[in-house]
Length: 392
Image (cartoon, rainbow, N blue to C red; front, side, top):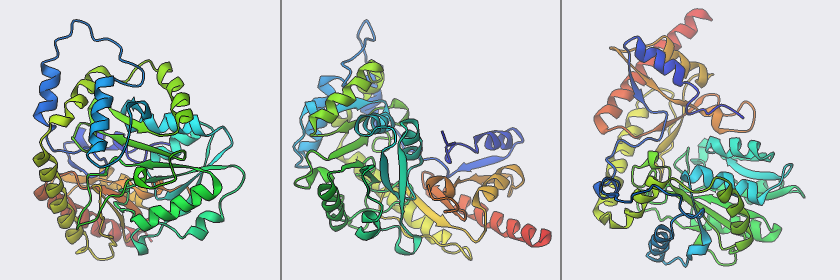
């Protein structure tokens, strides 16, 4: 298993904190926004006498609420099309193990969410990267690039829309290109839609569940973690109209018995969250996005495409080794008693040597803290560059 690029530097951050250094965490997508009170109240008012197992597919009452959520989006989903999981992560693990065998290949546009690689490795599946480029804002690679990689071992394509780590939002036209590929070669299309609510500048999120002809090919992942700032509840789910996929994934779901009980209690209250909550959250992240991009682009040599969704920016720095720089920030640098923690970009690639001068930044801090964090980053880059020159 590869180490998580998001968490691998945690020991250095802990050591820095022990020295008294304050750290601005830009490395992990942990929102600082309050979880809706109605979800917390649902846990506080829990009055069952036993915290029991639920159905392995998740509470029927909760799955019915998921159906209602998708019905409001004009998507026809049934309760039997859903398996509730311990976060979207477990849903991805179920799907990879259900749809691919050891030795099979999964095409993934890179940079990608690092766990896609880890979960595939654990299933004996080979991730085959098709590279998206910072010059295009990490748009979907050309259809020819996908076609060149498809062989008898290829069983699926996986994307995240909007993207973690780049914030790119795939257009309907791009999704239709993927639809053509998977139908032509009879592949699975796995789509992580965890950030579906976070699209900016009038962009429209298009769910692959709305594309005709893909009913047997599509597996979608979703979660309450980011939408409702409830990462610790560990509730996500997988959706597929392909009942062979669902029945196979249920074997994995039964093996882990049931999804988290109190998490489902909180998640079941999601439908009672007022629409104003998500509107306010979206406006807050949009403001943070604009501030982050504006401040980063003031730093000489930094390249920052404007993310269209989620709450991440994938940034190129004027250095050679971002992982070394990220560790140096924690071990050897502080600016007025503070430093920043970033996620090195190379961990989001499968192609060796790619992303060495890139980082992922999660804009999950308030605007004032974001400005402060970027100022510290700028000071760190300046000092790091001076040291590189001195030791050259």
